Image (cartoon, rainbow, N blue to C red; front, side):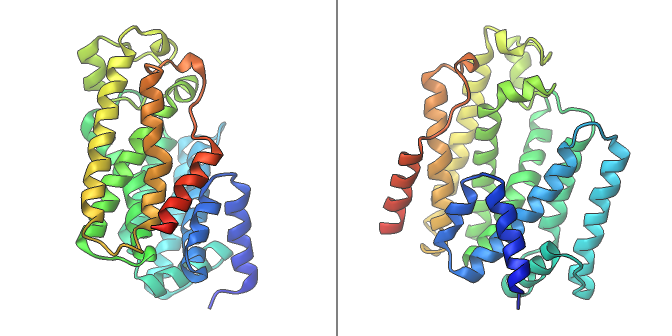
Length: 281
């Protein structure tokens, strides 16, 4: 049983993050919602470790390793020492979420904690997407109420679709941070520079982004095909996540991936409309 204080802690952490996740997960029953908030809080903390400016890789590695040990303690000895780990322990016990998926998330954050990622190979990009997004999906579908192979396929494909959309949305912000998550093979094929300081003015950047958008669309389609084989009610949060992200690809394409026009987002009214439609269905 999670204490009210621990529930309040993780809920406030999620709420303070300012993302739509806080409101999106309210469609879940309270116990499942609290489990998802615990997973989000874990992801937020390890992501903050990886992204913290001014710290060397060794110190970040040390903190991430401490989280690996905390996850091990949860599974091996049911030991928890903080609001986040106590709420995670409850999620582990109630929904049989898997240890390897927590570890994959930490491994993904470690990929971001070192030297900036610049033009990864397609294989490296796929591994990164699996760790930072699909692994979260594999935890989530179990909390949503479906642990079937089809639900894992939803997590595999939807996680990649969401992360590739994130990458396309954030090309300008990532370039400012000295990072390029667009695949090296696509950049080379179009003659686009791998210099973050110059990539936004590369004439063929839209062609590269179009190919990545096609990858994202293929993954969204795979996710939808797998959802048809899953528990309909359990898939509603996953459908909401797709509905909040997939339209961004159309906006980016209409702009021809011109990042000088600013960061794209879905209007709040449209998010609410999509949520209402899914809940009604």
